[in-house]
Every structure is written in C-alpha cells, then in structure tokens.
Length: 365
Image 1: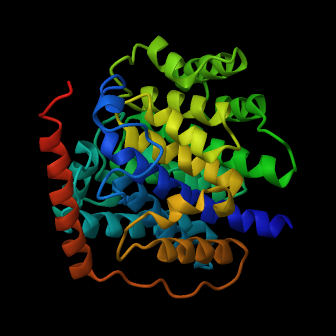
Image 2 (image 1 turned 90 degrees about the vertical axis):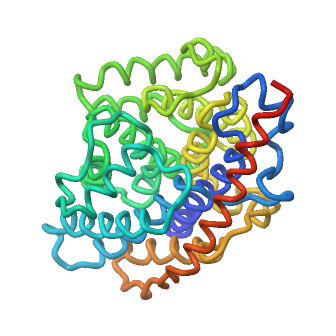
C-alpha cells in the first residue's frame, strides 16, 4: 500500500503542478480585484477556448524529474549531485534555446551564461526570485532521505539563483511536499504543520529566520481560520503576490495548510490572491498533489490540459520512471522531446500569451 501511495505522490506532484500552472496562467500579473471582473473565477481553464497550457513552472519540474532519473540511476552515489547539476544545466541550456515565453530574469540570465561557457556552479545570479521554489516540490515527493533531498534542492536552486533566500524558499516547498506525502502514507486525515515547520527551521537554520517567521505567521493564521486572501493582504500584497520568494512561499504554504486534501479549493484560493498566479498555483498544486495523488486531481482538469509534446500521458510516464529509479529499479529510457515540436509549440504558446497581454489593455480595469 505504501509503495502505491509513494508512486502516486510523485505522479500527483507532477500533474498537480501542471494543473495549477495551467489554471493560474491566464491570471498571471492581474490584480486580485481585477481578475474576477476580467476573467471570471478560476474554476476552469481560460487560456485557450476552455483549454489549459503549461508554462515554465511545469517545464522546470519536468526537467528536474528527468535529471533526477539520470542522477539516481547512476551507481556512484558520491557523484549524484554533480551529475544531477550537469544534466539539469544541459536541459536548461536547450530549454532557453527553444524560446519559452515568460522566463524569469534570473533563469534567463543563467541560461545565457551557460551558453557563454560558464560552468553550472558559476551560472547562477544573485536573485531571491521564486524560480527554485516552483520546481522544488518534486524533490520532497520523490526523495525520502531529508539530508539527501536538501542537497538536491541546493544544487537546483544555486544553478540559477545564488541568493540563499531562494534556496530557503525552495527548501520549505520541498519539505511541504514531503509532509503532504508522508501524512497520507501514515493515514492521517490532515498534515502536521508543526512537524513540517520544525523541519524547515532545522533545515535552513538561523540565517533563514525571516522566512521561518513568515511561515510561522502562516500556520498561526490558518489555525485562526483566516483566509489565504486575507493573509496575503496582511503581508501587504493587496495587488497580488509578487515573484519574491518570501512573498510567494508563505502564501502558497497558507493555501496548502488551509486545504491539504482539497486540490481544487487549494488551487483556486491561491489564484484568487492575484499576482504571480501561475507560479503560486503550480507550487500549491505540486504540494497538494503529492498528498492526494493523481486520483485526487479532478479528471476534468487533467483532461483539459492541451499540451504537446509534454502531454499529460508523457508527464505521467515521467513520474512513474522517477519512482522506478527511487525504488532501485532500472528506468525506461526517457522519451526524447522533438526540438522542432517544442519550438513550434512555444511559438504558438507565445501567440496566445501575447493575445492575453493585449486583452489586459482593455477594460474592465
């Protein structure tokens, strides 16, 4: 039973990230007050004729999963972090070349630096953006050993973002996904917020006290039955959640702790906070998805994702391959993504994104 739940945690994390990303994408950059008047409630896909598409949040999670598969399949445990970093750097380099839309500044600069010949350990830039956090849940869903998991989180974070705050935010997300998975395996009806918070404090130490204070505020707010939107406003984010990781992560954590077993409610709640909605929803989707598994994600949301070549079936297979490797079994060779298919898809995606951008110039304001 536990093996089945562990498998579902990884697949649910990847698919949950994709669904949150796709639902939140049309709302990205729109204020909490304007979004419902311009787009309506985030209860269905509103990106392209009732269909949803994924953005960099999901793509990075898939790149991390693929790199983990290759690193964990290597027999030499001592070099797994180095191998993982090199494989993720390679994927990031080619991902940038395929002209993805909406890339974060720090990630874009890191990708360019890699093409200019910088080594992976020197490619990152000093930034506290939420890029590392958006791809961190998969670590907690797939790796049980905490010290080992934290080494992978650190390597992933520092490849693009060297500000320790970015790593601390990613650590909190990874540990949240682990807690979400672990609580379900233990048969708990909810998650243990105190156990999770103690783990975060131990992992990031005194240097991350600013974040742990914010996370403690989030847990206290949830215990007082304060809504995620009210909590976000109390952090001074009335216009929406920014891409600063110390804004993104506490709000995402609040949504998770408020609805740990209700995937749809957790996602819509964080999207309604406005701002960087695709990333906040992707993070929440990954965390909650690790707890409820793919069967806890509404079928209509999974079926409504319109993607190629990273289809829902492809992402499901990716998750299953990662589980096989973590269980010590040889993984199936990863299906290569056709670069021309990716470029074609990205150009179409960019066209739709530009349409949404022009749409925001019109009322209602």
